[in-house]
Amino acid sequence: QVQLVDPGGGLVQPGGSLRLSCAASGSIFSDYTMGWYRQTPGKQRELVAAITSGGNTDYSASVKGRFTISRDNAKNTVYLQMNSLKPEDTAVYYCRANHPFTGAFYWGQGTQVTVSS
Image 1 (spheres, one colour):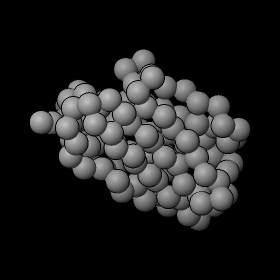
Image 2 (tube, helix red, strand yellow):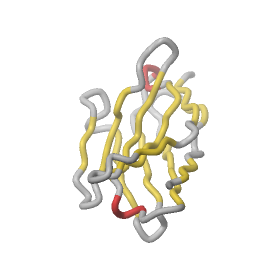
Image 3 (cartoon, rainbow, N blue to C red):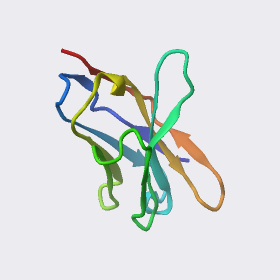
């Protein structure tokens, strides 16, 4: 079992930056692939970025070059550094832990990010 806590959202102006964090507890964090997803009303949750236990990363085309995912296994925490934010980045952001072998997955509670002037 993995519990995820993902605070760190808020209101930011276009062009600004924000860092999200997601702290995990309850299992071996380093075994899990960690991801950030986002969802807007009426749309499906979409993958923003992911990082494997080995540190390999993947990004959606819409955020590549602007967002950076990283993890600190000593702190059981994954981060999403978001730069050059755009109004279309406005969404609820969720972190997810996915075990690559068992298929078990867990979601954080989500945090609102609003990009607006």
